[in-house]
Image 1 (spheres, rainbow, N blue to C red):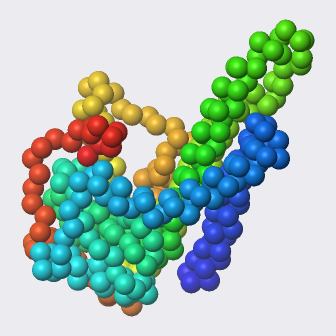
Image 2 (tube, rainbow, N blue to C red):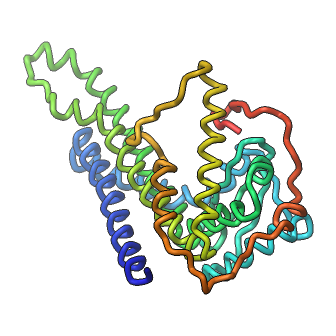
Length: 316
């Protein structure tokens, strides 16, 4: 599986560069439609500024939005042992810090860069998953950190936000100049208008495609780290069922959320589980066996408060 995995990694990196490059080209075109060559330069300059500052500001901001609290090694020695073992296997130095999110939702995510990363886990994750499944989820997040996926997605998000802002600005300029075009019988640039209107949608689709691509890679890397692809596969199944139950309670009873695959930030769990199940478990790897101490001294208590939407729009 080694050569095939390496070739897949190279192909996915090329695809990521192509998608991110396409978003930058779209940004340049929007700038040109608004103000010609000057607009192109301003657009690229602002995007570069956001891409430079975004990765530094985003991690701390995200953790504050979730009211995440840092867990020290003395509070959760078992959890930190797993994190350190995974980081060592991934040749990741230094290992990431661990944060606790007081929420009953089963969730985990990573923020930061390869050299300064953090993994945030909810109380619900430790209540709802077994030790084997927790190890698989943590390996998935370590994989994101190893390949700097958060940095890539932050760059894509910065470009996407710039495209959205410039699209709105361009539409406002068109509405302001529309009476002048009508009075002087000037031709209306319908193609430019259509592009301005749909540019944010195109950018969002490119960003979603990039995100799903990184998720598949992180699944494969997690299976490589633990030698146990079915541990993560089992966790994905539980996470999917838990999310579905939450949305059923939020929407009308008896209805299921049939979100189109085109609009999912993550691939369908069924597809991810199928790919993981197709991997041959590495019988020679016993780097991390599921131990009960992963949960028993995790420092994570039970949160009884139901999840709700916060003022900044984040649900936890």
